[in-house]
Length: 509
Image (cartoon, rainbow, N blue to C red; front, top):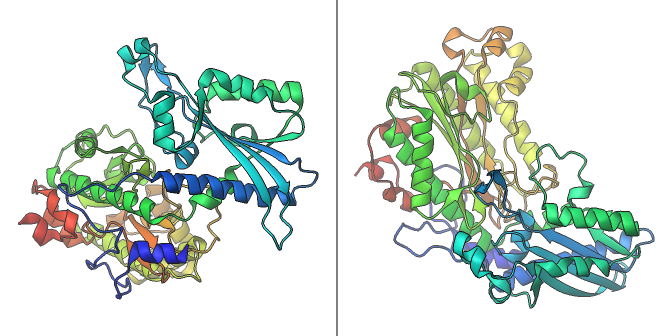
């Protein structure tokens, strides 16, 4: 893997020690709108992912007590969800299904039938046979009249490289071949907390529930195994993420350029969605567009209020490219001029983020970087006499109540079962997002000066760990400093210039 990453990155010799423009490795090159877009994940890489899962499951099965030799893993694709009769929500494919198939059609199912012939002993790899099945909806002239063309069986074979593709109606017959001597690996029935999870494929869920009742079959969760594979990104994945970051950067610059006092949050939110879709991308999550005091609500999504003169606007945006999402935040003055208090807090966030990025190394993990973020935030706030030194760390934990980062990829909060104590290996992608949220009740508690009361700011950029263990900023084409952001506001600049790492003076030319 290290050699593959080194070939994919081809790092420049200079280590990342500041947010100055630098040449990204091969595979991370910035591309203009006129250049070729990064290709989709290859069929060869998709096949290697499925094979890696089979091997990981074989190793895991060898450690299970009284484990049957047969294991069946189900990855249902997403169903179309409806907000009203015949009115669908925008479709979003299940991330695990997409990771192993690269297939975007709705209502499909990947089934992997795995037979462990010889368990893993510690000295030898397990001997495993496996078959791959894909169940898809057959093409229907009537359905395509209303909803457009689908891949069908032949199209699914071509798109995924999976040879055994069957009509969706055959899935129930496939399940009938399972018995109590089979372990079924299926996520929805193994989650203890489902409040933040997407709606499972109801067709598959109903069939599995019936199977469990009739056959007393053992069900395990594949999430730990899958997340361990998705945790480290391949060069091809990093190229897709870089393109998502590029478009996100361009959209944010467009939003800054369009900003003026009394503009509505909805106008800015609609603008960035238009700019993203005009470039052929979607949004990875609903954007946060929060003006003034509302920026203290971390996941504010109403986006329906005007932003008044002298207020800040916080925008958290991620464009989605071929399934992979960026996650970037900027906070700027809607009138183009930070107040002294706003500017001071923004400068602190920039310094804290820089310190965190420079601390990335093979010896560190996200939990370590979070502690560094809190320590640095407390130090700066005490130094500027904003919080008392006696309770500095406690105050910092309340002022920035969220983690400094999370893993990023097919999901904005990617691979949630991977601990933040895991080492930051080459190829891991994550944002660094220090924030300062001066909620009025918090300011009363820590006697924070009145000029800071109600201010909410976040600075968030996406990074990848290079083969030498340092951090490369995937969003380094996007301006960061207060001066640069001020210079963009209200200018209606041509954002194509940011595609080559241009700073503000280049963007304005």
